[in-house]
Length: 133
Image (cartoon, rainbow, N blue to C red; front, side):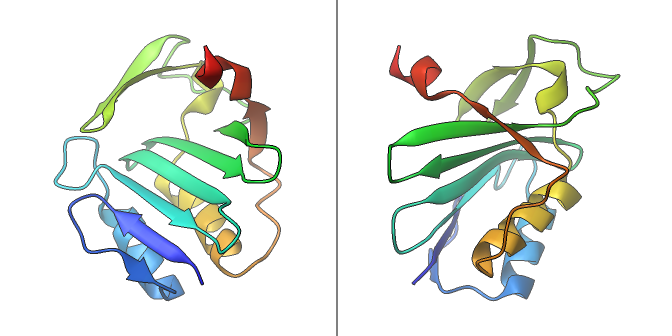
């Protein structure tokens, strides 16, 4: 079983790829839905906040309780380190390489949903200790 949760929407069990794509495409940091998560039967999940060209993407592995933030090899030329992503769930300061576009988020969510390897273009920075402090 996979659970798909989108802010202000009813959770969906075992969503279709089309449902995931449609929901991620509609996310916006200013709402009405600004975050979503996809959790597998083992408790591993992906979560996204923001929308369009300004998304934050994270994943959590249940085994080992590790938390990772997505980043790209090429940093954003628009958002310098420390720029804040504000959304209904709060505010997060991101590094220049942590701004992810919705199409890349869709690639990650659909791969996760289908049990495939996550896209190689997305790198993962371990932020487990950052969250524990």
